[in-house]
Length: 354
Ligand code: CP3
Image 1 (cartoon, rainbow, N blue to C red):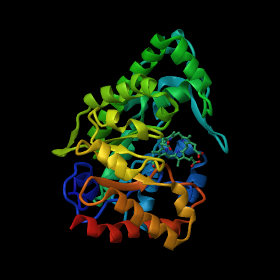
Image 2 (image 1 turned 45 degrees about the vertical axis):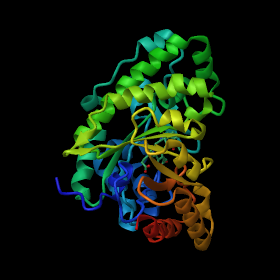
Image 3 (image 1 turned 180 degrees about the horizontal axis):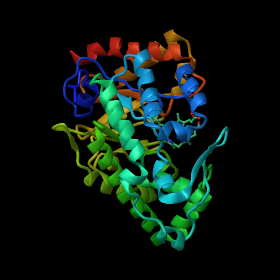
Image 4 (image 1 turned 90 degrees about the vertical axis):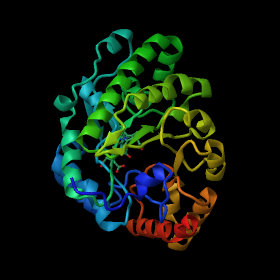
């Protein structure tokens, strides 16, 4: 495997000195790029893109050709695990993900088991292996999974949800069933992420998109505890280098001191969290990723640069910051604005690393 030419992202996650603040963008391969839309149209549907390693590799590399990004993330989806558990994932245009089967009862949960990684999720590992080869050490490749709680939200609700009525009823009425579901998911996610490391993933991210829908105590019991279990079960090394883990709970800004204790190397922040306050709260325990409002990219270039400067200043001097948006990039963003963002982060951050 060729040597890593740009390790700024891995170094920042471990709070080692860097020359500039690294940047990557959540959903950097996606519909805002015309070249993505072209491949997506040819593939026909989204799952064909995910399950065809050549196509997944191609769209993973697309943003790296346009922008001076410091990391790539394997093109896939968090819902591959429930799909591999037999729930039947499909995407309806304009409506998002849907499952043929849902998980609503103790019997439904008892029917679930940890999927065989190479059998049912081998396409993800193939995509990782191929992408590592093609990327040729340009930047590190991030592997990822949804958190057990976030995966459970989709499995119980059957689709995206606004109020999480069904999963919360399960959590409050039958907590033991909820815990059984989260346990089998935590085991599955651990095996999935370890398989991704073995295939070549150089860093990992846990997307806890819906942890922020919970109360503090419920978050700790039903989401954070399972992420901790996963992190403690990870291999944590690849090519003799540590594989850093980032935990991102959208809406989790109030719980950073708890999150900093679960063994993650970094915490992802959405834009509602004050970055300087977050750094003060977590101290030296973890690095921080984030946290520009994705809508800033709708603004004009000068305004984007101003916002970049504000965020870099809020983090301040020293390593431990990975620049990113506070959530995924919107599909209607002008791709030229992304170049403005990436270049501004690199140019304006040098002063904080001298
Ligand atoms: O970041 C990347 O570039 C890597 C690829 C990636 C995708 N999904 C591709 C995708 C990653 C990391 C994800 C994670 C994901 N998927 C999350 C967690 C992160 C977050 O955004 O909170 C969640 C909740 C999902 C589930 C999911 N997948 C939804 C709700 C949707 C529909 C979204 C929409 O706006 O239509 C998807 C589909 C999806 N996953 C798309 C992409 C590029 C769009 C599908 C398309 O091309 O039509």
